[in-house]
Image (cartoon, rainbow, N blue to C red; front, side, top):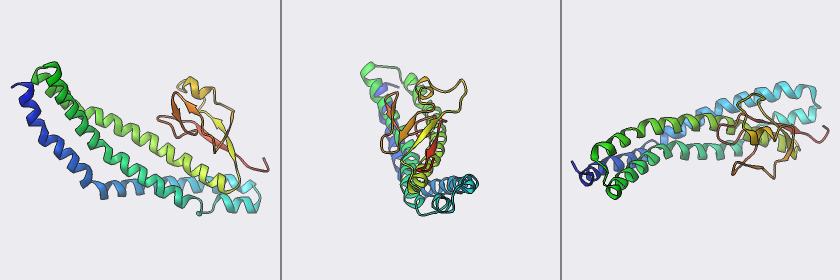
Length: 208
C-alpha cells in the first residue's frame, strides 16, 4: 500500500478521535470534579491542622470555603479541556504523520508503526497531566486561601532532593509575590504549578 493510500485510510480514525473528544465531555467533568473534591478536602484538613497555632480570626479566614469556590470552578474547566485534549492531540499527531509520509515518501509500514505508537505517547502525556494537575490544583487552593487571609506572597520551597531542577533549586528560600509569578525555563508559574514541579509555597502572612 502506498503512503497516499494509507493517508486515506487514517481519515476515519482522525474523525473518530475528534468525535470522541466531544463524547467524553460529561465523563471528563466527572473525573475533574472528583479529583478536585479530593484535593480540596485534603487542603482544608491541612489548613485546620496548621492554623490551630494562629489567631482565631486568621484561622477562620484560612479554613473558610469562600476563597476556594471560584478557584475550583476555574480549575475544573481547565482540567476538562486538558482531558479532552488527549484524543484531539492524538488525532493531530495521526494527521501530521500521514501528511509527513506524503512529503517524505515514507513507506506505509513505517507510517503505520508511528501511528500505532500514538497510544504510548498519549499515555505518557496523560500521566504528566495527572501529576501536574494534582499539584497545580493544590497550589492554587493554597494561593486562594492565603490571599484571602491577607498573604501577599510566599517563600518558595523545593522538595530538597537530587531530582530538583537547577532553576527551581535557585528559587529555594526566595520570597515571591502572588501577583508576580516567576518565569523558569521559559515557563511562568508559582511553586507547584509547573509541569512535574514538586515545589510548594510557604505563605507569608501579615503577622509573620
